[in-house]
Length: 328
Image (tube, rainbow, N blue to C red):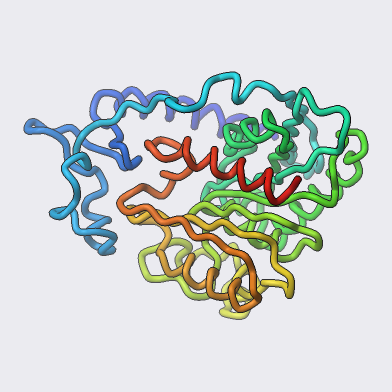
């Protein structure tokens, strides 16, 4: 635990320093991609990676690709996020770290059981925490869909995918244990997550009986087949070192006979996750006659659908609408 506190403190100091430099030299465009300030204007900070992976043709990009964008909430207000109460729990303890759950419950819903979403954060399977999906979780919770944000172990804790999966299953047991206390409707629930959280939430949705809804933002679904240059690389041993282990960790191979309703997103400026991941998962879902939506936006960043761009408010509003439709 002391090591984690020390690491967190060092990272905080690092982030403060990086943010000062970022404010001076870097800004984001409306697509959520980072711009680097030059004497004659702005260029894409990650242009070389975008070109190397052939994500899109920078020379044919729209002019506003190189214009800084000030991110402000335009359709939602603070009250759209604060009509809920957040509870904090430790659901599992290891010798060197603790795993927590943050529970966002609607304030004005005491008469009937509450449907809920389990949100699993991203961070490359080796970072992040329960704050990762606080925005969308508290937004949905403020409108009648409880949000439960869970944590899991990382490789730095000495854990692998099977360990993280067990953590998430233990989190579900904890939720079940407290469902009556929180007034949850255990017949109406779903999973959601971004990036590595998109992978883990999809895996949980495919393997948890009774799941009705999945929202996966720019996730990785076929660990066995990843394009070179994208994540996770073959040298990332968290999933194991053999093709069979990576196949077993892939949601694309876990689609049940009666899949939940699924929303998948992919953005055309994503240089971390390749688009084929979404397409292969979509195909596997449709083979099982799943109701599946795919949302694609050209040029937007890896995280464009969940923040830092001009589309994330619309996405949150849409997810709420679908959650109310599917889970209530």
